[in-house]
Length: 338
Ligand code: DGY
Image (tube, rainbow, N blue to C red):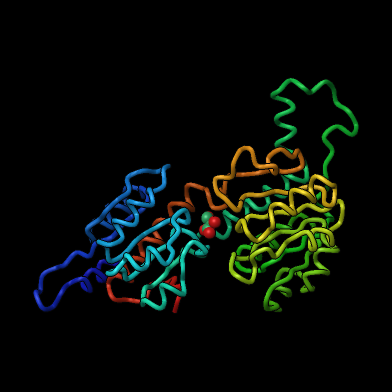
């Protein structure tokens, strides 16, 4: 964070620094907290693992000029109405479907996110999930640990090849493009569907623009990488799943809500598609009793797309930076509601 920005928090009427008040809804790394404390008076929900209770969030928001929050906080109308002094909501995520952005804009509240720094890490995880699902890695590791490995057998735990297979990416944003670059290295054929075609990426990566239907019909792996919004909610339902190959695998590392979970459960149980790798769910944490978790052709992860130490640290730094700039009178680099 640039020191010069601190000047903006000086109230010229009193010519002494006025520290704005900020709520941080989870414990940041020490160096980030220290930097924030240099600029602001901090209200901290001092836990790494537990989310801030709703009643505390509702109460604290009344007091603060800015909030650095996580995707676990539903920053809806109720919050916006209570946050009378709120100038900025800085989200520690690239996705911001947890925030009522239109409502924030109406109230002149800036909303920021953390794109870029998590692109490669999330693409790595997406690819890991493709490999884990297609080659049954979780099931195989469990078989071994549970003493069920009797002998080497020709068709024992056989999966689907990635090399030579066709990958269909729904949503060719930064993460989608990073996944496609990895797929190229694995010798995959690639196609994508996006709101707007991206001819420059088609050339660079060697990926072909197709309709959603064409993608679903021809892909061996369908990777969902769009943000969740009104247009993408329930983008994949029974209808879309029925278009997919029986041997296809669906991967979702974007957001729950884009893929209809009930339809997906049925499709996986009835052999409409071969498998699914999921890092995100409608309700997080997903209940351990959820029918999806009973299926052996599902690899499910607890929303760890960007979870590397390096990337999560960078996300904290960027979220703090966005917040600091916004509260210093500047335009934060990753302003969602320009
Ligand atoms: C995001 O940033 O939106 C991810 O889901 C969390 O890594």
